[in-house]
Image (cartoon, rainbow, N blue to C red; front, side):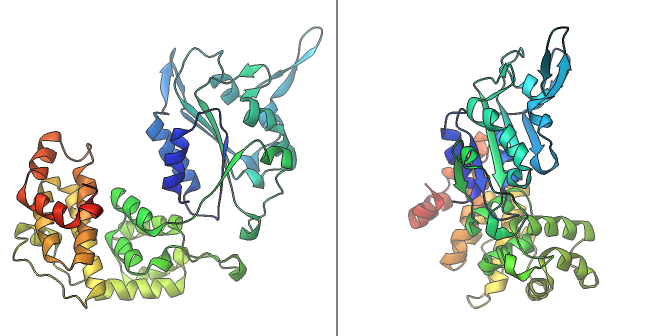
Length: 360
């Protein structure tokens, strides 16, 4: 399953169930946990003047066993253990009841003694004398042996304490996420046209730069920093996704750089230029450009639907779905706008025509 499907399933499970996300590097395991925390309301809160975390990230490969079990300290007659801060703040002894996630990232890159130390944390939700609150979720992420990331074998006793979910890439869901998170439109268009280039990771190649959802996200950030796609700076992008894919991406971007501006298209959607059905790259680029613009200008939703209607069905559906996510996002459109659009003739027409795709 992909990371979005995994997070949707995890929300349905009782927090008492510990989860381990397994998958290759760069497919969004850690980002998925961050998004899950936001969805569940795991956020920093002020408790008696002290800021308390909602998600406790622990990088297993940098930990010692005492980072989990705590450190010894002496009483007059005996030695006890002082737990780490996260164990205390997650415990029932702490005067608060907000939801939280304890997340061990790169768990199998941690020492075997570290993995052994978390047995009670994972299964009993406890550390030393401290029992975690019932709304604390324990999660972990790890790569697979075939990924060649230097992982250690997970003890069978720890395996049996986790629910293991195998995470894979899903192009459509990633593109939807990329649109929602404002990644560089040309990247989204390229991935939609070349699905296999979202993830080119092959551990046998021993490459330093290759395509993953994470490296495309970083490439988007770099392109924004560089102000576009200056060809003399393509070595920067190649350092993230590899030279071969970078050359293809630049060629794609060059072939689509003359598309009309989205604001011009949406100013008069019924007369704006529509790419021909053989101009596949241009169609992908146009759809992504218009979709990204509508996200920033929700008042243009109705006009975007009018333009989608004029495109060949495959691309009209893609644009309509992108616009529909903006329409249904309460952070982007108010209720009055949604009602107005849903009652419009163009929405009614497209819903009848493509209802299975628009989710209407």
